Image (cartoon, rainbow, N blue to C red; front, top):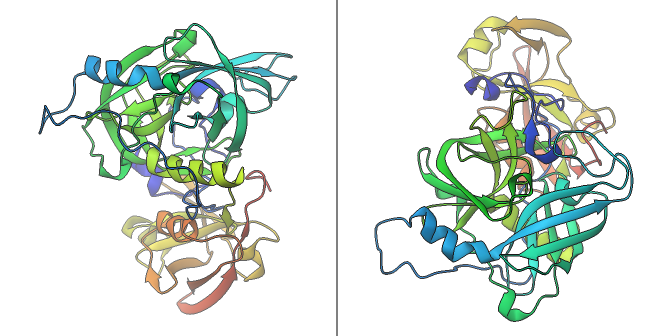
Length: 397
């Protein structure tokens, strides 16, 4: 799957969001270049939980699975979202039905009753019911806001203070491949189910509900299934490091490859949603292929690194700045790559090694901000100033 980051990316990814099911394992095309900010500027919002338990009695070691479960399960939510008609709520297996109910997971993030979950769990819902921990009763939840670009939604329940046990939000940037992780959720409606595994890869990309890309995603072999959507992924200290969102599947169920939105992304999205009810994402309007030495040799490129522009969205900031896509197709390791387009080699004077760096640069900005792109084409280099727009509702424009 390393090829994911080295070939062309488009908005037509194989990741499906209906109840966590992703399409058959294959090279995943990514909507990377139609970039939007997955890392918006923080807004004033109620402070999210920073710790849930004191692990000072066990310095230098992680908690056992049952210790994590005992400490955190009360903060995990079972979510039932009732839809208003066909095509609104995704079912666990991709189908749609009138007046259907989607089930998923979530977790408390503060003592004001805010619950984090996946946007695809509650999308289009007329009524959302939340059960906290092992309580028998449920609460009708208010949808504070959802961000389809990161598949994060925030709910609010008006529950008594003694029933609110928010979970600690950790630091997903500190994860390493091989770190132990634990998932708690409601797979197939089986509430308060715990599974364990490791971080099997980092910096994956998956398709969001709106067709754009979620970056820096955590891959795990901890078994997660339909119904785990929106539930927490914990590190060994019992802190939430991800929001379980999708699985890779051959159609036969869990195959040990799941994906979680990193909590560093989800935390900032939550702050924006709580403060404003929505999140704005910056938009450039290109898709691109990472240039490495192999691709440079095959396509006879002057640049040894950068992002080879594959597509430009008509009317987008990139289009208005005169950035041009490739006009011919070449086969590289069985993948079709558009040749002859502009190569983005730097953003705001900083060299880029590939499309991920372009995405990261756009992620740091808001709609209306300007970027300076350094472009190479046919041996010539030029600089273009681009004013970023607000991302459209979906990757198709």
